[in-house]
Image 1 (tube, rainbow, N blue to C red):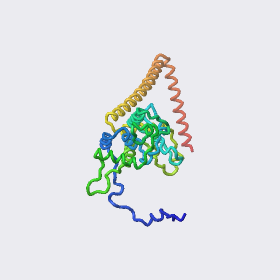
Image 2 (image 1 turned 90 degrees about the vertical axis):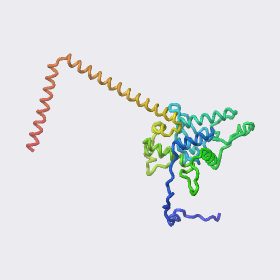
Image 3 (image 1 turned 180 degrees about the vertical axis):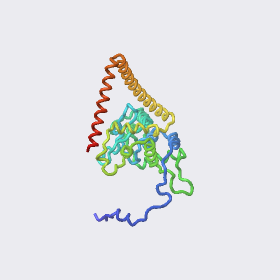
Image 4 (image 1 turned 90 degrees about the horizontal axis):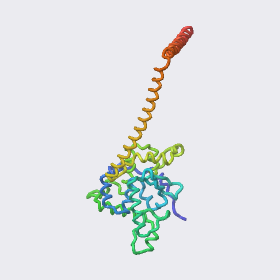
Amino acid sequence: MNDMSLNVDKIKRFLPQDESDHYATDRPYSVKEIELILEKCDVRSRVIILLMASAGMRIGALPGLRVGDIKRMDEFGVYMIWVYNRSKADRYYTFCNPECASAIDTYLDYRRSFHEEIKDKSPLVREEFNIEDDLRVKYPRFLSQRMFCFIVEDVLKRAGVNQITAGNKRREVMRSHGFRKFFITQCDKAHMPFTVREFISGHRLPNQDASYILRTEEETLAEYVKAIPRLTINPTQRLRQENAQLRNKQNDYLAELGEFNKDFNEIKQWFGELKRGNQKELMNKFYTMTADKIQDEYYESEESKSK
C-alpha cells in the first residue's frame, strides 16, 4: 500500500546516452553456427532452436505455447503458430518452415510412443519425464522461461558456439535473441515487405499501419514462403526448397508461354482470314478511315489558327 511509484520516463531523461563500443553491435547467428548447434540437439531442444530461428519467436513466448496453438498448412508443409494466444493485446500469428514442422512432428510422435495423450491444451514443449512414471508421462507440465534458457545454454556449450571468451564480458551473439535476429535478417534478405516482417515478428506496426494495412492469412503465408529457403538450416532441405521454388517459377513461365501461344495462334488465324477475304474492300475501308482522320486533324488545326 505504501510503495512509491517512480516516473521512469522522466528519470531516463537525466541519464547519459549509452555510447559504449558494445552498444547494439551484437550480430545474428549464421547458418553454419545454427547447423552446428542442431547437430548437438535432441528431439526437444531441436524444436526450441528451430522455433526461434524459423518462426522468429521470443524465448519468452515458448513456455506458454500449446499444441492447440499450431495449425498444419499441408500445401506448403509449414505450421501456422498463434503466439501469446491467450492474450488479446499481444496475440499474433507467425509460421515455421517445413524443417521446423518436421522436428515438431518427430517430437510429438516421440511423446506418443510413450503413451502420452497429446491434447490441444498439452504443452508443445514439455518437461523431461521418466518413462517408468506413468503419471508424469500422462500429465505433462509446462517449462519455465528459465528452463528454456538453460536448455539453450546447454546446447551452445556442447556445440562450442557463442561462448564467452577470456577478457570479454559479453557474447558476440545474444544467446536467445540471436536466433530472432537471424529470422528477421533472412526475411529482409528475401525482400519480405516491411509490414509483413514486423507482423510475424510480433512487433507493433508504426503509426496507423496496423489499422490500415490488413493482410489475409493466405497473403501473409505467401510472403513467408518466399523466405523459406533462407530460413532452412539443413543444406539438403534448403536445396530441396530452392528446387521447389524454381519448379513453381518454371510452371508459371510455361503457363504464360501457353497463353502467349494461344494469343499468337488467334492472331495468325485472324490474318489468314484477312488474306482469304476481300482485300480490296479492306483497303478501301483503311483509306477511308485514314482520310477521315487526316481531314479531322486539318479542320482542328485551322480552327486553332483562327483562334
